[in-house]
Image 1 (cartoon, rainbow, N blue to C red):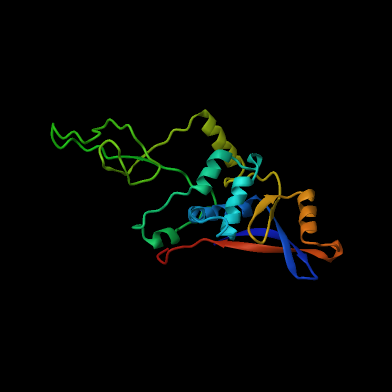
Image 2 (tube, one colour):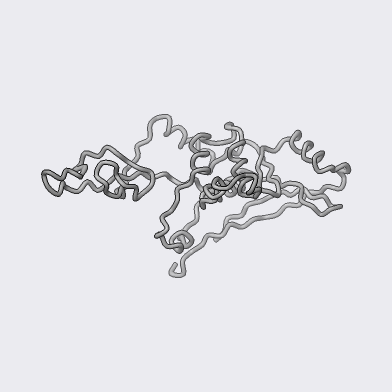
Length: 230
């Protein structure tokens, strides 16, 4: 099974160079979703002067893209630029072999400790049902009793959060809105498509003869990875 995405490439036939790609919301959601690998954490550990890479440019695009183009600017930027780090003990196959691959934004989960009974009267090291802490990283040590916080809690969204999720559902999930077309450069930097941006780019690349430019539509296939047993 595969999901099909379309891109329009603007190509200079003289140099056979792709100037930029015209992409829709679905493509941008996939590109931004790559940061959940979590490559953005690696990028932040290195100086931008030392790491002039596509991942760094993708991170810069998430930071600089105007709030108006995100479904939930604050939360979406946090999820993309500060992805959850998986435990080193988690088998790699469990991350790669999935029955279904979703392009939607990952759901944040919350956990508490187990709250087992106190070992004795003088060793009051358990929360004993009086849970005062939750975490969004499973396995974090409880600051009250020291146990690993692994019991998943059910999050109840308030009215404002419910409206955001409703808006996300109406937008088709993901991170960005589909109100505009986006420009994707060959270094993976992303910006809203506009006549001004296109002209600025052509001037920057010293393109004088616009008749040498042509559009080339390509299709991308996102395959769902399945385990052998399926």
